[in-house]
Image (cartoon, rainbow, N blue to C red; front, side, top):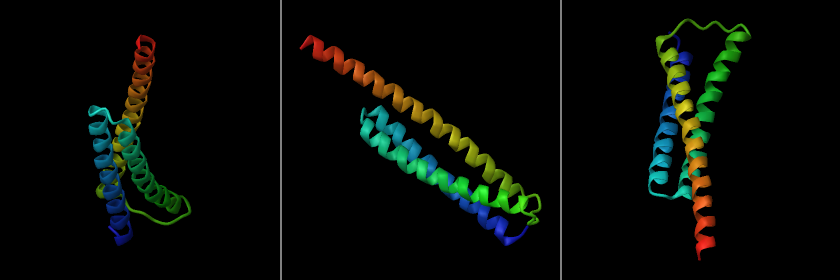
Length: 114
């Protein structure tokens, strides 16, 4: 396996892993009721997963342009990691939206009662 493939795979894995960590922190913030912090952590997760996706896209575009790339289990693992964590981020974004809507409804009800 060539060095460029290894480097790309590791960049994807590291950035996706950082995204997973920020996503987990966002979920912890939701559990604490701190939706502003959750949004902040989600923005950080999005930046990291976007960078991982950029590296993958560059590799795919390179191969489409004729650059030879042999099959690599490491690169396949990196792509799997990227897509799994991207799915986790998508679910967390929706959870944050649900909790924000719930908080808004509660605030409206409390305002009516006050």
